[in-house]
Image (tube, rainbow, N blue to C red; front, side):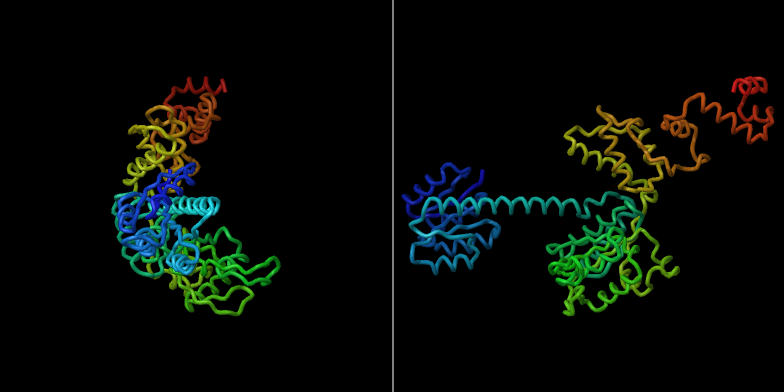
Length: 453
C-alpha cells in the first residue's frame, strides 16, 4: 500500500478527494495547511503528494520546493483554481509531476494519480536495484584477508579518488571486473555510467562502431545514428575487458582517441570531446605481447599508468575458507535453506585443488555442492572438481589417487588391477621377478595373475 499526503485547507474538498480515491490502494495522510504538510512529509514515509497551491501559513509552491529538495523522486500533483494556469506552470517548472484545475473531473484526477503512483513505484524499484548493484560491487564484497588482497584494496582505494587510467591484470576468474566496478563506485564518477566492453567477444570489424558509434548511412544497415560507448559513458567509466584481444589496427585508433580525448563517429566528420575514465583488464601478458609485436608499446604505456595485478586463487589459498563461507551463505539465501557445514576433509580438498578457474570456479563448485547436499553437511561426494588439470600423479598421495580413480566411473576394479600389472611389467622390462617386487607380490602370485589375464 502506498502512502499519499493530501494537502488541502477545505475539509469538504479533502473528503471529496478521499471518496474519489477510496477504491485505490492508498493510505492517506491529511494536512490542512502548508506547515502541517511539511511536518507530516518529514516524519512519515510518503510516496505521493497532492497539494493545493493556495494554502494557509505556507504556500503550496513552498511545500513543493521543500519536497523536491528533500526527496526529489516523490511525485507531486498540484491543484489550482481555474484561471490560475500561470501558477500551475510555475509548479511544473519547480518539479511538479502534473496539475489539475478546480473544478476537476473524477477521471482526470484518478488518471493523474495512477500515473504518478506508477512513476513512484518504478522509481522505488530503480533505487532498490541501484542499491543492490552498488552493494554487490563495493570493495567490501571483494572477499579475502590475505596480504595480497589487502594490498590490492589499498591500491584500488587510492586510485579511485583520481581519474587515472588503470590496468587490471590477472587470470580469468580472479575478479577483474568486480574490482573495476568497485573502483568506479568509490570514485567521484559513481553517479554516472559504468559501461563494460568485452574486446574478445566483439568482432574486430564491429568494435570500432561499438566504441565510437556511427552516423546514419555510414554502412549498410546503419539506418539511424548510434552513439558509441565513449559517448554513452560520458562523465563515467569505460571498462575495456580483455584489451589484449584488440587487433593492431584498432589499437592505433584507440590510442589516438586516448591521446586527443576526442572521437569521430563512423561516417561522420564532427569531432566529439570525450570525458570518460578508462579501466582496462586482461588475462594476457601484455609486456610479452609487446616484445612479440602483437600489442603496441605506446598503447601499453598509455593504459598501464596505474597497474594492479590480482593474484590467482592458488597464490592466496588462505582466503579459500573465507570465500567458501561467503558463497555458502549467498547460496543458502538464494535457495532458501540453512547454510550447511563443511567437513575438514572437504576443506582440505578445496585447499589443495589447483583452481585454474580461480574464484569463479570455486563459486561454481560450491553452487553444485549446495544443490547436491540435501542435508546439513557438504561432504566429499557433493564436491565435483575439475580434474582435467590435476596435479602430476607424483604429487598426489594415495588417498588422492584412489579418490581420483573412483570419480571416473569408467574404471572398474578388474580393469584397474590389469592396468596396474601392465604398467609394472613395462617398467620392469617384462621381467616378472622385478615386476613382482614393484607390486609387492611373490613371483608365483604375479605369474598366476598374468596367466589369468
